[in-house]
Length: 212
Image 1 (cartoon, rainbow, N blue to C red):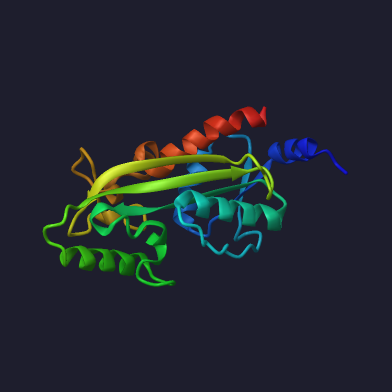
Image 2: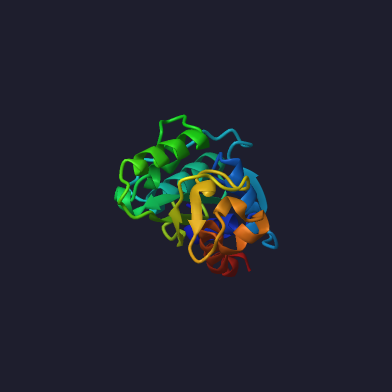
């Protein structure tokens, strides 16, 4: 039987890394964040991998489910991200259902509309919120020591969308200590301060020693 340590080493240093998401916005941001890391990114969609069933109870659980799913089908190391908007007045909703808040096939516009309608019915509730991201790397499907990095980005939900950059809830998310929404940031600026930027950078810092 092959030595598991040798298998892990071979897969860890593979030049290809599958990104376990079908969201083109996430792919763009993750690709930019991984510039300078000696890996070739390929999306699970390019390899014909269907989305995993995300039945975890947290961002970290769902991210790990997606990474293991992509790694198992492709035989490649996998990186996954699970992220969303967490609104204090809604007990953490939309949370892990951010992409499906208004329904399984909901558009960004529909999700945003539902969030605004829900908060409008709570005029005295605080609008504080945060974007949260859990980024996960697995060297192979049953990797017993996955890298998991988590980060948040504080702000609040506004009543009227602003900005055309980004995706998801970006136009409604007013950044804490700023006058702009996430959608008003240039992509390169968002990739310096966002929840995903912080989580993926922390993941890369832990991953790099494995790539030596």
